[in-house]
Each structure stands twice: as structure tokens, then as C-alpha cells.
Image 1 (cartoon, rainbow, N blue to C red):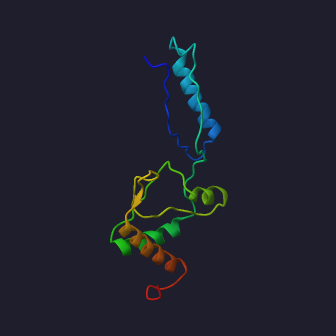
Image 2: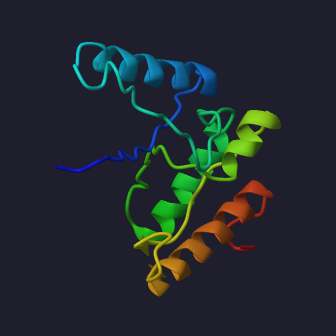
Image 3: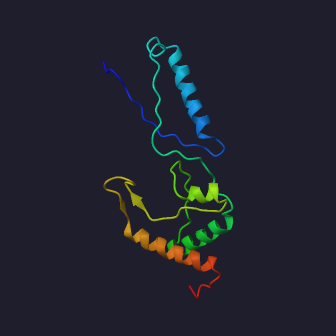
Length: 147
């Protein structure tokens, strides 16, 4: 019989919710679940928060830029760009939350992100570089033959 147990979870914040609201909801759920348990009602679980925490956001004001990126991606890859919604955080949040300007992430294929053996597919780096060059050319008003 273990003397203690630890549960580590990752919690993503949806836009419109504060860290305090989410923490309160988690703590209420744990307290309510513990209330009827003979042991936990007398030995309430301890909740600790650690790691990165930031407000959630939706990308806004980026429709034109995303359309340009989609076209550039399609031209380079011959495929439709895939949109991914994630609970991960990136520096794009800073621009969206605090500068009221668009910021999106577009990048190469990565495997084992943030692990000791993280790696990036070099062919995808080449595709991303070409895509970003075409994106910038159109964004800056250059024609295809100038890019």
C-alpha cells in the first residue's frame, strides 16, 4: 500500500478564463470528490501548481495573412495546409494577447518535441523556408517573377 500518490496534469486555459478561475474549479472538484471519502475527508489532498501558466487565446485579425500562408504552402507542397489547435503555448500568444496583432505558428515537422532526442525533418525545413519566402514576397507586394 503506497504511503502517498502524486497526480501531475497539464491544464490548458481557454480564452476568457483566468488562472484564478481555473484553479478554483480544479480545487472545488478535488474538494468535492474528497468530501465523501473516509480517508480523504480527514486528509485532504494537497494541490500544488508549478510550470508555465498563461492565458489562453484565439488568433485574431489574421485572416488575410493566413490566406497568404495557405496559398504559399499549397504552391510549395501541393497540399492543403492543415490547421492545428493546441493547448501548447508559444510566443505567438504575446502578440495576440498583449499587442492586439496577429501571430501564428508555421514550421517544420518535428519529432519528440522538447525531448533529449528532439529532431527536425530537414526536408520539411526546406519546404517551410520556401513557403515563408513566398509568404513574405506576397505580403510585401512582390509579384511571383520577383520572388
